[in-house]
Amino acid sequence: MSDTHKGSGLAPAPTPATSSLTPPVSGLRGTLARSITLMKPVTWFAPAWAFLCGAVASGALSWQVEPLSRLALGILMAGPILCGLSQVVNDYCDRDVDAINEPQRLIPSGQVSLRHVHILAVILTWLGTCMAFVLGGQVALFVGLGLIAALAYSLKPVRAKRNGWIGNALVAISYEGLAWMAGHVAFAPLTAQSVTIALLYSFGAHGIMTVNDFKSMKGDAVMGIRSIPVQYGKVAAARMVVTIMGLAQIAVIVLLFAWGHPIAAGVVFLLLAAQSIPNMRFIRDPEHNEVFFNATAIMLYVWGMLAAAIGLAS
Image (cartoon, rainbow, N blue to C red; front, side, top):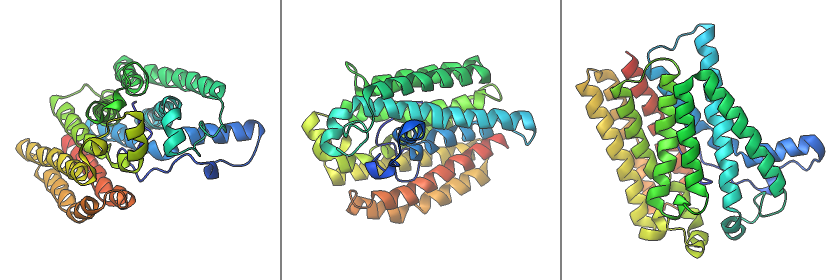
């Protein structure tokens, strides 16, 4: 759906596409290995999880073959195909700044040619579009919006990633909101409650998208990318991350309780409370606690999404 090379989104801590990750093989096997590395599998989790949560929230998911097949197709579409596509596009557009921040990445290091990137992008776009239409016209609409957001994020002249507020918003709504709503509408008509929860988790994801910006502050500043840490400094940006995440979850808790889902609200509350320790540690030193924060606070946030989806389905 959309993306960012920072890609943490709601997934475990991402690893750069370094040469050490690329098997020293040639031919078709080597091409496939480099293609998958360029698509950054670690980032696929976020939109795939959001699609799953949307499907659960629809209340129409069951253990029968047909619904499970649709779910598997949607997860494949949202994660490996479309998220992988947005990673390829973003790395292509980021090749200049990556030459400063992470010159060992596949494109700036010359391990992957621009022709390779172009062909891979076309294949992934075709696959994602076909899968979307198989799942339904409304799913295809959300996919189209996500692709537009991905292009607006990375490509000139828009290149929304140059501003942390706008760029992170595009990524967050794509990773969370659009993927969640696509998952819901693949099984049942959208409801106002599901859309509201999807948007709230998208708001919280805006904060999460800042997490990986701390390690690239030097290159971003040189290239004129005004990420949140570049604009406000490390400590203030870290506080913004945990505040935005917290506000989103508080709103989810309040709404779930008001809508008559107290158990789901209680679970999300406990998961939010458990984030307090990693939040404090992250604020103290965001640059060196990024991996810990991804593995704790963000993962708790992710489980809260599923709890909220189950509550909506009940």
